[in-house]
Length: 118
Image 1 (tube, rainbow, N blue to C red):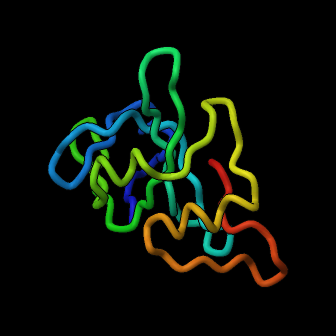
Image 2: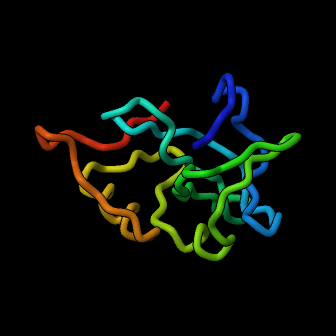
């Protein structure tokens, strides 16, 4: 689990993979709507003028001086489902994000969204 006192303080910090390779910059945190705990992050990737946001799970992510380290490889994260930098993840896209990482997806008991942006 991502453990930081104030998640918003981490926006803009580097996100690195398990080997320390920079993936991009932390843009936002998505919480599990059932538990209100941090679940996914969006990371800004791409070249200048063609940035996009990719999703990466925060399970067992760790923080270091100025960076957030995730357990997934740079390639896997960059190949993850993405949205435009001013876009929003549609409810119908949530399952694809989970499946990309081999995670089980279950919408809320009433069919509500599983992820909420913070």
